[in-house]
Length: 249
Image (cartoon, rainbow, N blue to C red; front, top):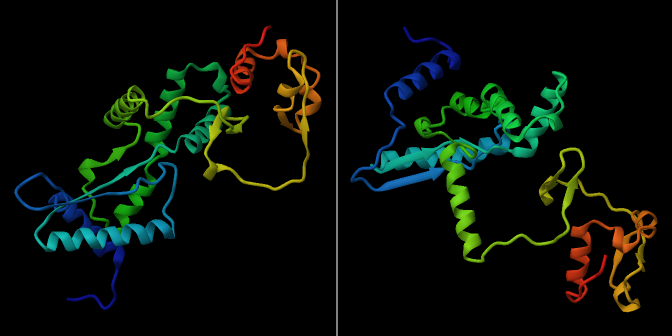
């Protein structure tokens, strides 16, 4: 007897389990024309929103069409480590347990982070399954798993050896709580009126002093500090900026 109403809770879960059990979304290399999409990895701390829905629906349509055309379709799922958001969650958890992050070694903190990720991460992938996404779940990746980590290190070392990337001195958005730099996308901008001051410090000529400009917020504190008392790396930075002249002190 055919039910008079559609009950998605029963129908969708039943058929999705059938698809997964029979590995209908799994792909292995063969003679067929390959068709692959790597899902733009959502944050491991995130939850599904309308942007994900639109993006992943379009990907799913393309993958299912490719399968119908006889192609070897492989949709690779995964999540991004979202380091700053994840760290904030882990630090909050540690604080609730009476543990100060500063008291932990790098390895100890990473262990707590991985434990949190295994327990709370990946909710968004479960939501994608609930939507019927035809991903090859056997190939699920995480941007900090061993394979991806080694690949990133290899590429960075290779680019560094080729002179394509380098560590330089530049302005950054600094998070004083997490003690890390933030990207432009993670900063909430706020315009404010301010002043710029020219700062003259002992050990600098008049022409050199004109080149040093600081925000008014820092001027009162900095103008009282003799150049020779600044941190070594600060003095070295100033020296490089001042025509690479060496400063004593």
